[in-house]
Length: 201
Picture (cartoon, one colour):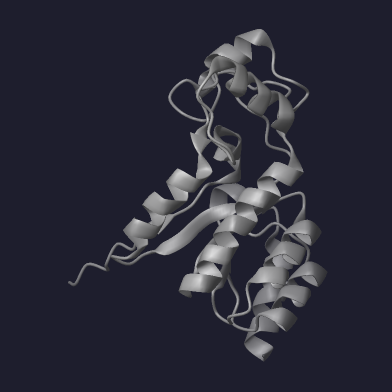
C-alpha cells in the first residue's frame, strides 16, 4: 500500500500570535511594552516573567518563505476571540498551570493573519484557517486578500450555515474539516446542511 505524502504547513496559529512582534524586541523593557500593548488585561508580573522574548515576525516570515521553496502549504492560521494565554506563557508542556485572564488583541491577531493571507495569495498556496467567535471579521480579511479559488480550507468549522453560504458564494471550491473532538457532534445539524449545499453546487 502506498503511503500518502506528508505535506508540511507553515504559519502562526492564533494561540501563539502573542509571541510575535512587528518590531525587533531585544530588551526586557521592549518585551514588557510588547505584551502590555497586545494583551488585555495587561499581564501580571508573574505571567510577564513566564512569557518569552517575542520573535520578530519579519525574520520568521523569511524563514517560512525559504521552507516554502521546497513545497508545502500555509496554516494553521486564523483568529480566536475566546483564547486566553496560559499562565505558563504559551501552549506547551507546562500548559497544565491553567489559564490567565489575558486575551490577545484582535488587531494584533488580524495583522498576523493577514500577513499570511498575503503570502498565500502571492505564492498561490492553500491555506488552513482556524476561527473561534469572530467569523464575520475573519471572512472580511480573507475576501479582501485571497482572490484565487480553491485555496481556502476552514479547519474544524464552527460557524453557522448562513455564514458558510457566504463562503461558498465567494469561494465555490472551499473546503472545511471536521473534528469529532471539536465540532462533529456539536455542529452536526449545521454540517449536514453544508454537506447538502455543497453537493447541490
